[in-house]
Image (tube, rainbow, N blue to C red):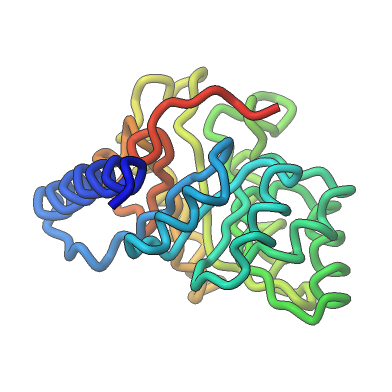
Length: 239
């Protein structure tokens, strides 16, 4: 193996051990949690290595990085997740490669995603991004809609041609009542997921937890964890 492949294989094994241990501690089966490797700022060559190592879900947060990378890796059996704040002028590009958009947080974005998904003859999965630090504006520091706004957006996605409502996503907030209380934040997301599934039973996906707090997310019941640094290491941003 190349040095980089050896490094990534070792990092993946450590993350796998952490997820497995967290599942055991929570009384869950390992198969209940899907690892999404966040490959932002890393080259397509790393994505190719990850695919060789068995990774099937990768995530990006900037279209300008993601679009050429996805094109370069189009031959690989990967599911691409878009996890960054998404501007409507980038929607056409993102719909071209993203299987799931995890950062749906406003009606205008849903309209744009639906239009482009229909045009591209694709079905795009959508997660409502929940901002647990939402203030009076109803928006979070890093995007997302307040819990009060979930129902409206979920109904819009559910009715939108070309879109599929998959569930909810959150990022552990740095401010507000849940700052420094990741487990409680993720448990709140699970409670919101339970509420959502009463009206949308197929929306079972709960994306929460990253390199530093994946154990708390697994303990709370997350179905997907998004891990970047722990797999790929710390690297300067591109561009």
